[in-house]
Image 1 (cartoon, one colour):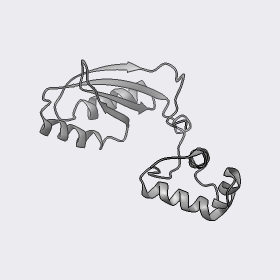
Image 2 (tube, helix red, strand yellow):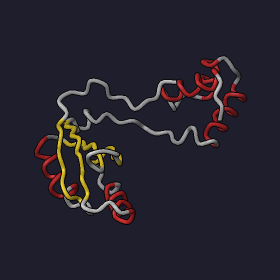
Image 3 (cartoon, one colour):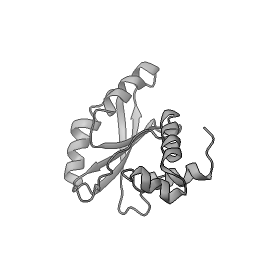
Image 4 (tube, rainbow, N blue to C red):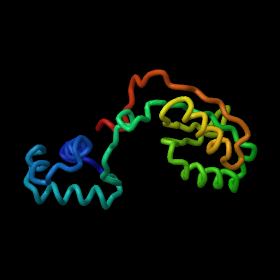
Length: 152
């Protein structure tokens, strides 16, 4: 889908507040309600807008401890990767997981209450994932930039 300036304005406004009433959204982007509603629906149908959700504050929930974990697998055949991927999705403390091309297989972001909580998650959950051969942990000291939004 090709985006014009108005589409980008709509997306920017929705990123800031997805609960914005359509009439207010239309006012902010300089169109009437009907064309804005149509554009939003088209972007949803095209898969550009994939969800609307509440973004929670990990800090206010007491989850201030962030650790990045390099994971090396003992087996990297497709069936092993599939089993690892399925299992890692079941660990709620894992905020992000990426397959990596490089010196290890996966990079995992874990959010916990504190180092003791992280130790429990590592011992009980991450180390128990299928085909985990070894891990290396890197504790984040400070979030300098933490933003999942995309600037348009």
